[in-house]
Picture 1 (cartoon, rainbow, N blue to C red):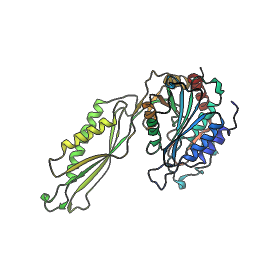
Picture 2: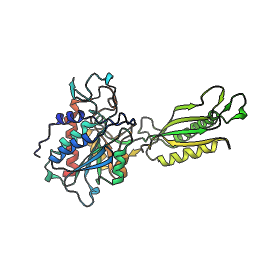
Picture 3: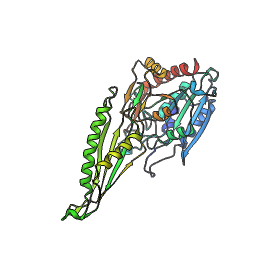
Picture 4: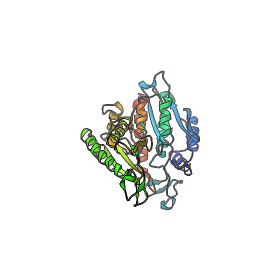
Length: 387
């Protein structure tokens, strides 16, 4: 395919040089539109059909397709997916400029090299190895917003029922090893409101800290039940986990504690529903509360990320295992995979970076991973779009 695009390293450089930090703090949060427009310009020049899907103010997804779209592309086709946002960075801890691609000792440094802007450049490089007329099934390049914060981009895809394809590879950092499962993430606040009063007489109030003691005991009982019920030995930690991570209550030793709040983190295994867990959490805790004098609320700290599992017998899983020589495994971190799975797309996570470099100062990508990744993607494209 004849191209006017920059070469691979120049594409990575331009992506890294275009800031797109997403953060829950609006003072730090940035638009991803400059990155989306950069990708759109390249892909338009390369003959892709390009759609920019608005997500919210200053944020958008990009869906670019090459090859004929059939009335029901879910019978075939491949998505190469990545998110365009990065996490915030601590400038004083970087030895390299986070927004300039720097080569040093066989590594390419820059914010987003490993997690995961560089993958989008490698996906484009693999896609143009074939003529447009070679494509019997569509190839999609998918670029999303806000993966590092709210998953708003992935949720917008579900709402739009796009893209329509059979298989997807998300290029998150897995060290070139295919991943077909990850745990979910659920973070909840548990708030108890009692009644403050003078500590000289317990009858003057209702102590929320003492009520939280009952809540914590019930949470530990529930955690044990969950870990006895659910096990998956393909995970490093083979059971669902529950962490009691933050608590605050009261204001002074001589006042009965009028309010107390606990934050917990639950990491469910595939097959465990966030909706069901939230229902059971509230049901159990309401049961252990004293009959009067207290109000208990359970509130999500964020919407949560479902667990993901793609069957071991999936053609994509088997192809990735054969091409990498690695058995498909699991990871502990969350991705956009469950949202693509909700669209009926069999999805794996497979990228050239390493998770140890993600979200770290002096994030880097090993240069010797670039060509093998492009070649791997070429072979997947050939198998699922060309043959």
